[in-house]
Amino acid sequence: MARATHTPSCARRLRQEAAQRGEPQGQIARTIHAHCEVSLLRAHRLARGLTLKEAAEQLNELSAGRPRAPRVDGDQLGHWEKGRQPLAATIELLSEFYDNCTAAELGFTSAGIVAPPSDLVRAGGLQASRTVEPGLFTEGALEQRVDAVRRSVDRTLASGTVSPTQLDMLDEQVLWAREQYVYTAPTPMIRVLLDLLTEVEGLAGQRQPAAVQVRLSELTSMLATLVADALMKLGHLPRSRSWYATARTAADDSGNGELRARVRAQAAMLPFYYGPLEAAVQLAREARIICRGRPSATAAFASAAEARALAKMGDREGAEEAHRLAAAAFEQSGAGGPSDNDAFGFPERRFRLYESGILTALGKTGEARRVQETALRLYPSRTGIDPALLSLEAALCLAKDRSVTEACQLAAATFLRIAPEHRTLIVEERAREVIGALPSGAESGRAARELHEILALPSGRM
Image 1 (cartoon, rainbow, N blue to C red):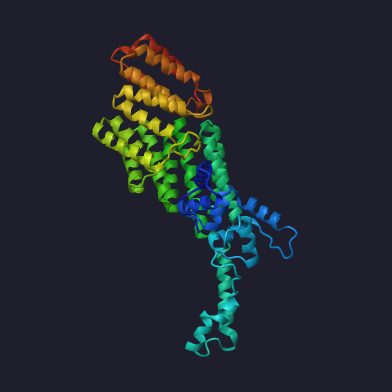
Image 2 (image 1 turned 135 degrees about the horizontal axis):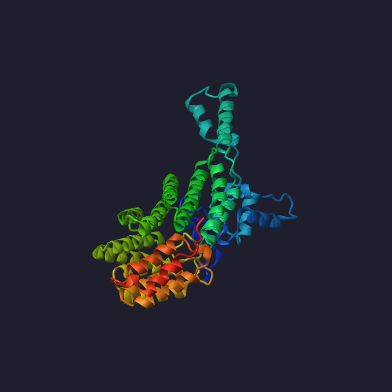
């Protein structure tokens, strides 16, 4: 079964949550099977957190020393997980390995040996045609052609260069990059992302089975989105816009609705920070519509992005309605969790970051400050610029409340605390918004002048 929607991090999250509840491995596997739309056999492996290679090695260790014991490699296991049925001895080994599950619990139709094609021809299907059309297989000529053409088709379908093990490894590398992205500076991160994209592009450019091609398009979209985001942080706006377009094209090519929505919601950040705000609203709204009202982390993200842009435009009614939708989707999806260190996650701390932006733009400074304090407590010690953005929004609230000196001092202290490689254009622009929000005449005062001087310090741009 092809994975059209979910990544290994999804199964890992389900596994961790179920383990905390004390659920047995079989129940965890059934949950992953239903939620991630993978085969039962694959779900049992993911429930144990094993790669194809690790599972194959452990299966061979289990069968070591047994007479006529089947040997397993990652490629074979990947084929079985996608629907091919192994021999009876192998099914028995898999059943034992996965806590004595039955063949049906592993997704096999039976524990017997699948009849070879020649036996099937004699026993059923094509043999029955002989009674309908006498002489159809005269002297075996057509029989031979039937087998020859089938073998040719099988060779064509198997001609892709990506093995299940390779795809698993790519999944793991991209997941690692998504986790690293949360706290790594943009410039070194772009180099990592481009290396991975080069590898994925090389594979996608060759003939691959449809399911593999879908997955490669998904990986391309994820990596392109992170490149676009990093370029946005660095202030390379035209390049960022082009990379976001590439990410949307790849997501659309994959047919993965969740990813299509996610990329658009992420792309809305560029016009949110740099304009036009109408484009931010449009992208976020497209993402929300793609989610079709289904509660999910992406639906919450899309609605929150839409609400934040509407609030910044001054559309109070629209912003409050979108905020309500975001809060409902977030609560219903169970998307929270402070330990989610994935750039494609939407844990509570990121939801609160967006909520802070909504409330700050609407002038609800008291509520915004409480949300900012809650969010800051949720961030781990090693993270990116989000805590700085929250502190700058706190400075914006002070500026709106006419606390000029405190607003400028907080913005200045926040900017100086940021490591130089993270002092990118996006942080500078948010700090300059604090000056722009000061009461008339205050922007030329001493506190504002000092903030201007600090913002002139070298940045972390490429």
